Image (cartoon, rainbow, N blue to C red; front, side, top):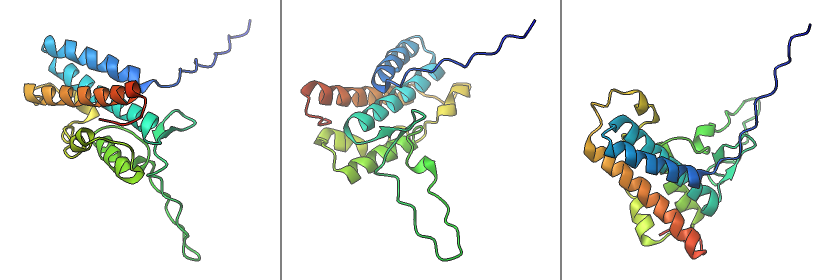
Amino acid sequence: MTAPTPSAPPTPPPPDFRAAGEHHYRTARLAADAQLSVSADHLAGLAAECAIKAILLAYLGSRLSTKDKPFSPALKLPPPQPPPGEKVKPQPPKEYEHGHLPDLWAQLAEVVKISQGRVGPVFQQMLQQNPFQSWHVAGRYCSGTSISTSDIEQHLKAAYNLIAAFEYARQTGNGTLR
């Protein structure tokens, strides 16, 4: 008798950041209503991350890598010419791959600036201040004592505004983020 050969894990579907953002936002709202502060704040951040990635991919020139990781060609620098006999370190992927907040917010602002994407004044103003500056994806492991109701509301509002900006651009069909 031979042992069964393990089958390859199923290939996950490509990411749908828009749908995931909306799902995480609705779930964050439910968690907030149930006073589950850790889950509410974590999911609000994930909703915002997904909305930002959807915006970057759909309207600001970002792409998915062969491993389905979003990245911005506008942030990827050409490799520098090394001086003779020296090696140059390649640009760290963290600088152009779209990961987590709060760094992702800064990348969005930079891509908007570089790409001269079509953004309205409301969206431009929203980018001026990062509401996720003190948010971290690892916050899901915290006890919840450091998360205030105002933090959660600020993060939920920002996630909602990002989702709404994406939807406005999608519904108008002109790609302008408002």
